[in-house]
Amino acid sequence: MTRPTEFTPDAATPDRPYAEVIGDPIGHSKSPLIHNFWLAALGIEGQYRATRVAPDDLAAFFAARAADPHWRGCNITVPHKVEALGHVADPGGVRASIGAINTVFRQGHPEHGALAGTNTDAAGFWSPIGDLDLTGQPVTVIGAGGAARAILWALARVGVGKVTVLNRNPLKAAALLSSFGLKGQALPLTPQVPPAALLVNATSLGMTGQPPLDIDLSAMPDDGIVYDIVYAPLETPLLAAARARGLDTVDGLEMLIAQAAVAFAILFGTEPPRERDDELRALLAG
Image (cartoon, rainbow, N blue to C red):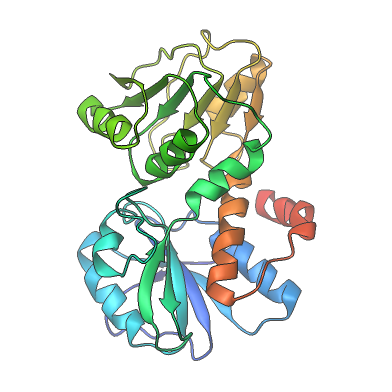
């Protein structure tokens, strides 16, 4: 695992093209492994690293990077996906649609273009389940943060049925359902989940160093699918419980690699070698 750097306004930066992932915490991120694997495979000069940016330093971070000609952009994880919108341009109207960004890039010129934001989470989320027909089917989403926004936006595009959002703050969850035009209900986060064709954990609960996610899957139908966006550990307690029940599962690496592929093309101007995904997954799981 690449050791993360700590952002300070006067911190040294690479003297060659680079991109990074920012968040707080950030030590768990596998994004550097993914992007550096692709850079090496394609023989592209560049570096991708992880940088911890405290919430109070977000404005200073973007100001410093905007002035750095070697910086190609960044991916964004918790807790910055919503707040980052206030520091960059929004050419695709992400603020009015998903309401959160996970990628910042330079518009127009790779060295001094203006900073702009977009969201690759929705495409990444949908990629491993794109062959499913969820039309009219009930779905449960756990969480109401930046990742949940992208997931709910994607679900609204495919005409799912009733959506239940479980969150510590049900009012926030209800507002999200309304904003995406989804019918359903917002409930407090409790172990009991309703029957659903698809259950998605869109929180960091269950991640290494985070509180556990206590969920009872007994109400899930036998053909239900459990999807956990957490990838550290790869085998989360939620996925282990789902497999013990014989349910189909989707792990966090599926979404991580898919959204990273879209971001890589934006940041480095070329498609990553997806034909080497099996090799990449083995590296990430090792």
